[in-house]
Image 1 (cartoon, helix red, strand yellow):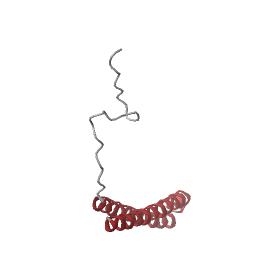
Image 2: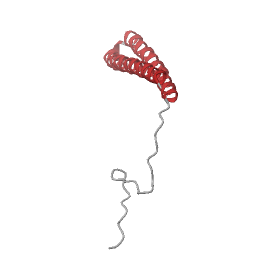
Image 3: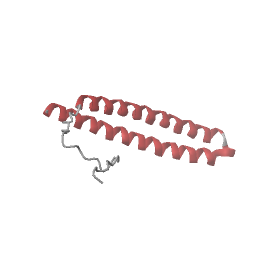
Image 4: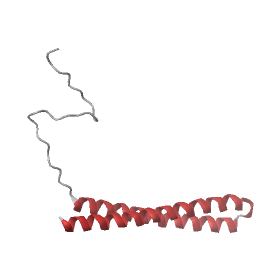
Length: 105
């Protein structure tokens, strides 16, 4: 076989002799904006789930027949609220890192 086979795979892609690699320019402002939006969305989600947990706590007091069900749902909502708040905190630090990197460049 005189010609080489070209492999079209994502993981084994090699540049041709005539092709040059492009320099990738990282847009830190765009990354900072992305982390800001995700932080705000997760903060809103945490507040919404916290409100739902309070709602279920109220339902548990008002509906003694199904109090156990409402207590379980309240606990699940509280755990999800804590997780969402933790993720918002993580995104806040990612936003700060992106800001710091953009100032360095």
